[in-house]
Amino acid sequence: MTASAVPAAGIVKTRREIRRARVLGIVYLLLALAVLFVFAIGTEGDATFELARPDDRFGIPALSLPAAGFAYVVVALLVAAATMQLLRGFGRWTNIVLAGLLLLVVFSFLTWAAAGTSLSLVGMLRTSLSLGVPIALGSLSGVLCERVAVINIAIEGMLLSGAFVGALIGSVLGSWVGLVAATLSGVFLAWILAVLAIRYRVDQIIVGVVLNIFVMGLTAFLATQIMEPNPHLNSADVFGDIGIPLLKDIPFVGPILFDQNLFVYALYILTAALAFGLYRTRWGLRARAVGEHPKAADTLGIGVNRLRYLNVLMGGAVAGFGGAFFTLGSVGRFDDNMSAGRGFIALAAMIFGRWHPVGAVAGALLFGFSDALRIRISLVRPIPSEFLAMAPYLVTIIVVAGVIGRARPPAADGQPYIKE
Image (cartoon, rainbow, N blue to C red; front, top):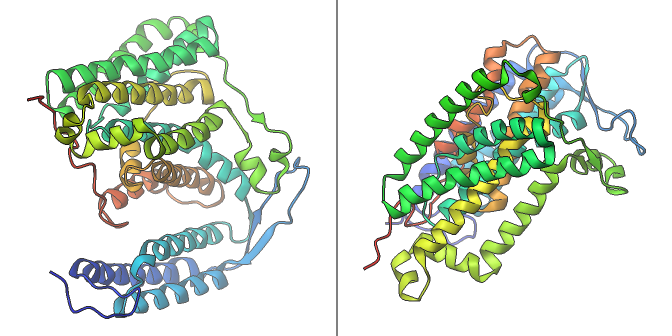
């Protein structure tokens, strides 16, 4: 049922939109109060943001902002947005306005943290991208699986197995072989998930949880029994950064996007390929049909379960590859539970992105940014480390709670298909 409609474009019309507009209006007011009392009142000095690295060919002058002044501007914008939201809403621009205001609040936090000192914005964004890579690859794995209606809770286990196998095999046979082995470990776990969930129709969530617990225990045991007595089996070479000529010299953007390692460039390619494949190819059309209405897809001659097997195995390969980042793309050694819940955050990023590859990666980079924020801010402000450590998980809770809007999964998500 709809409320009385106002003909002007952009006006909130449905009861759900009216309710959400009111909630967001209250949220904006609360954010305005928080920014006012925490970031504005009592803050002194200018915040300086470095927009280039010392060795960059084309440097950009540092940006200096009055911390308190910028916070007051953000407060005024939040109050104005809250007033507009409570009176008539922003219609289809609601999510864009929400994203913009949250970005301003985060930047206000940065100016408060860097007041009286300097902060390398390029370095923090490079770190954000790097930290977001395994989450992004895990979220792409989730998109591949859930687009054909298979819930992959086992992303965490696949990431962890990829990290362990990559470190072990990479230490013995080289990083490239370790990378292939890590990818295959994800495929193996995906095969177990597919057989149990598709052929034997075991509850998909239970299978995923069991696989996660199994991998967590197995890798911890093998690390203790094999790697600790033999340190040379846990010292793989790390893939270094590869700067793309000309592109890496683009001011500000170049060092962030085009002076990264193999995993970052693979993420670019996989995101573009998956977005194109799902929406511009026959395979993508069939995969989405299987996820929405498997019975109708079957009547059209599409092999529902065969396509589910294919997508789940591809999802496992992407997750195993992403897990190798923890070792072969970062520190070169394996530590117990080093994925630290990134697989579950990847699921939240997938929901944030509404099961679209580009949206899922954008959500993953948001979580990577919150993690990088924790690392950088701890160096310039005496904020309790426990508070900063929970930032990525707070973002996860906010996303899953639906503040960004209700997301609809594929209609047949989690439902086994029995051919009649």
